[in-house]
Image (cartoon, rainbow, N blue to C red):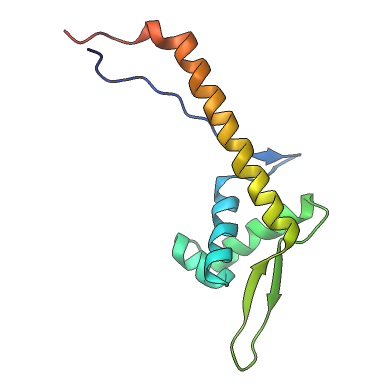
Length: 120
């Protein structure tokens, strides 16, 4: 029997000179999609609105399209939704990450299984 099972972890991010899209940005977009609001998405993630807005602005500065369709105020209040391109990017990121994690786990076991300690 093995104890203290060794595992690997993989972080996936998109970057040019700086990271502009990672798990946090993906989670923020997912929350915007679910809540219909960048403010509520930031609140649910425990981050400030300014931090969330910065994540969106940085990502958009590296992409050729906006991530959010936002509307302000009015009788029903403001809100945000993902653009079609943002939905496609989010789905591509999820699928890519899923494949990277699967490949990493598969190869981790291939290369490191013999380094596991046996229980005494």
